[in-house]
Image (cartoon, rainbow, N blue to C red; front, side, top):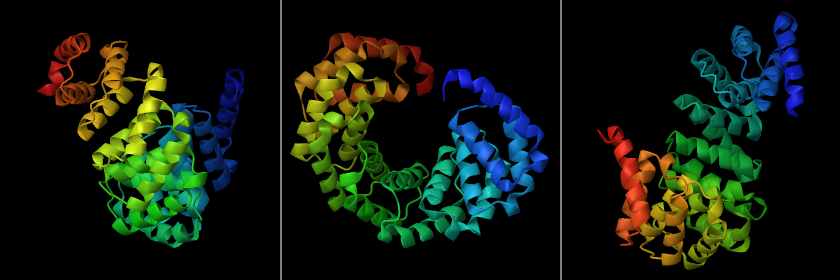
Length: 322
């Protein structure tokens, strides 16, 4: 959508709010979905749509419930009453949600850091029916894995099913899906060797096509799971050196931490990460300062300009350590 079209969309959504009494439940969810897709965060409109959804929560279809939850999470409305109502209503309609709806529901609650345990139990139960049939798309599988990892919903049976389906579909998975799923498994300290072997093969084949965040997430994930297969490390190293001019603080911090965790002292890469860090040291978070400092100490590489800059940045954020 072009920027010049946004005023028009905003005007149409204002008109839609005035006509809410004439809307079907699908109309309500569709307008919410449209606002989210366009990232239009107009509070009066969202409040009116949320109230309309609350008033008719029992009439919303499974698709309407999933779409409304996704829209509210995307727009970060944090309407807890509505999300609680959706969780209760969706419990009774889980079989009608389908793979996309299940993934969107899980993603929405994880994004808002809300954990309705009964709903996640129901989502997991239905996913276990659908995953062996390969009904989920790879992005939907990745979103489901990310959601349970974000909320620390540890369900070994579900993870086994997601891993098996992800392994089977890895040749058609997007790089983001591979990186996200691997990160999610590492976050839960869940290791599935066939999946990890498949990831290694995929990374070796496509390493030049992974973007910086995906590269650093993969390095962090494998290091967290204490796995350092040489073909993967070589591929990630080559990709890192090729794209380091595009890196941000998180990529530098996570990757330096991963290589230190692996006890791999790749001096050209550590020097390149240090030089890149100097471009944005003022943006480092407390965790990134700690991880980077630990990593360089662990591999015993002293890059004086970076360490001086990190020290200065740490003094600016000293309040975060108390």
